[in-house]
Length: 117
Length: 143
Image (cartoon, rainbow over all chains, first blue to last red; front, top):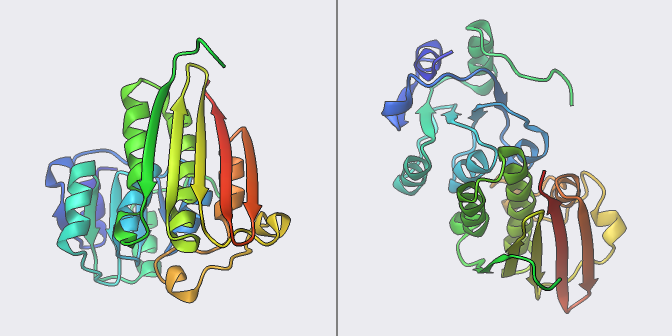
């Protein structure tokens, strides 16, 4: 699905890289521990997280993640957004909690990639 | 090995600002991409080095990272003057971590770093002495 469809599914606000909303993504992962993202994520292009610090963007960059969806209405500061802009990573913010956001995205057709570790 | 073409990169990893942790790994990833190395190999190097860089910032107040890019492999050396690893076998177990609670709040310290570094490299060797520091040697073969 297009990143713009994610925006619609979780009623998100687009915080940077608006020019990439028509990019296609196929699967997502969700975690608050970046250690787990680094250890278990394979080719998921979307990261759903409640963590909000620059290491979220750096982790996304290392894993070739194209879109970070912040849940629970987390608001990144200018440093985080600047880093994301440099790396071309779309940052979204939604008021939904993690479980609901994941459910809405799954229902909308976004897969989780591999089922089990 | 003499006669081999090699690109050598060196970084001082500072622990003064957690926000900047990972900048060396980011620079290496960018360089590898520019050299046309395939994305799977680039990601393996990036993950292994980033985990190591984060460890240096969390546990050792920074250190020095050296990366040598050869035609067939990437060699990474991460050297710090931190407290050392008391028991390397225990530290290699998934889930074992000595990271303080404030580091977990930043999204790290799940005890996955060292095992993940091993998983993403073809060779990994740890030299560590209590009170002297730790040096980690990693090799990723390019496919």
